[in-house]
Image (cartoon, rainbow, N blue to C red; front, side):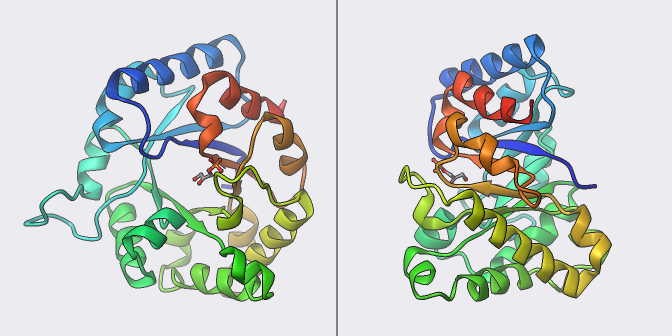
Length: 251
Ligand code: 13P
């Protein structure tokens, strides 16, 4: 079902103690002022169990930042979807541009990860987005279409469980936000691509988040757009007050 979501992506930040403190602070703020959206913190693997112990599930949901494309076995250093699920996490970010860019993750691997996540009862937050060159040469709609279509062997029921996050790579960590109109145009495009394959109902029920230098000062304008259902927040999710400021964009 389509819902408004604000999800933090802590990336490779915070020690365990710092992460637990941050999660605790987010939880406390949400106890004082209830959110008008679903709130998720996506944290490093090492922090999942400890963060799960300090958040209240009705206030804050838990997610990982990645999982393996393999179910189990001799893959030293990897963490499987079932391991993530066993910590109490409900979500997993997949296909973040940093994974695509620095770790060479491709569509085939991302489909395998998505299937394993779903099989293990995790809800994927699947990231798509163009790089600056693609924005400038005008191919961005096709690029993002291709990234979404990589999941089109999923059944409508499976696809219906996926949260899409549009994160223009040129806006990530750069302080340069897509304008609310650029975000709205792309989100509408993504919804159309989904509707073409799965029908309008699945498309209308999909939550599509915006990510890329989203902060308290611009969240309200972005989230006011009809096809923007919330945000995936990097830097500003590392300070509980800033993260809360973004959550409050939903009132
Ligand atoms: P920033 O909010 O730091 O730009 O990061 C966005 C992002 O990559 C979230 O996944």
